[in-house]
Image (cartoon, rainbow, N blue to C red; front, side, top):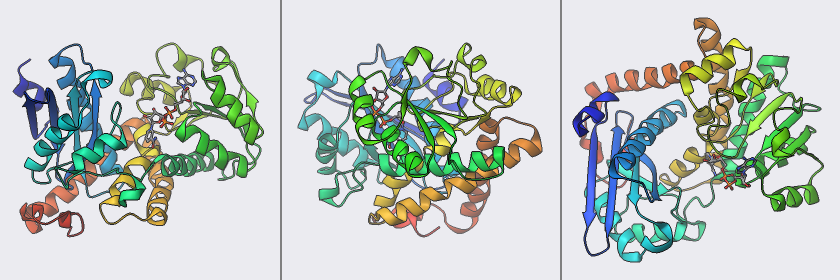
Length: 370
Ligand code: NAD
């Protein structure tokens, strides 16, 4: 497939290939859609096997950001960037500043942030060259770690699912298995314990399990017993593809609701299979949108309270998705995709008549003018 064919396949607007000999920078910035606003998405640094893999990854991820921002009610589009390189040897101030200059050159069509393989420190170099960056540290009046807001969103999204299945938001006494006790999972556990849930925990890193057990009551589940433990809610908060052809048949919990990205190995078929099996699945990019909400909030002058309030809207978005899934007899993954597309189409219609592209002048002013 040619590059233009790849772009046309999912309707990407623009892809920028960036190279800088002195720093060794090889990066690709993909802007999927800017109908709702400037594209926002992290930059990840990975030693891709080849350029095709890097391009595929950035196209897939930038498209995902469009849907995530749209469903979260943000005036943002979808974008993403990848830097091809080894994080252990390839990083330097020069490299990230060179990347920052390319971002600046896009004049606000793409706003970058931290992602896999990139740290807050790296983003501070990027920030020396461009204003179009967020996810910087609290000391620089940034949003800092998004995980508590992500976890809050997962918690309220889980309550929306509980309301659907049991007729009440309450998680008191519910057996909830949290897989992954990292930054998101740990914060989520705190909410669940505060509410009186019966917590089950699983992590491949013993130190995370021990840390949690020192601070909260919970039952430890070994990774090999993840799908043999009868629970009311399974909450994946570790890595992607936890739900695949094999595990989709083993889940017995009536609800799957967690913060991990790309929980379904194949979104369409596994989303449909969960529905067939009567399992309510909270689409990952909807329920974990608190991280993006937190970062986007920085663009307006960061307020943790405002970010948390916005993340609470995940409750009603999940309810809406469940309703659409029931009304149209489609999976929740399909319902969330339709919701995102509806919003983009409606606002796209408005922007053709009222706003145009002139809003891209002035620091982030375009975010509030819509
Ligand atoms: P993290 O690296 O802090 O935590 C991940 C945890 O999962 C680690 O403790 C790790 O030991 C554990 N783990 C890895 N493989 C496992 C397995 N097979 N079984 C059990 N435990 C396992 O990451 P995080 O920031 O907490 O993010 C967790 C997930 O949520 C990721 O998929 C991430 O992409 C997604 N996410 C995070 C945020 C955020 O704000 N941090 C926002 C949106 C989505």
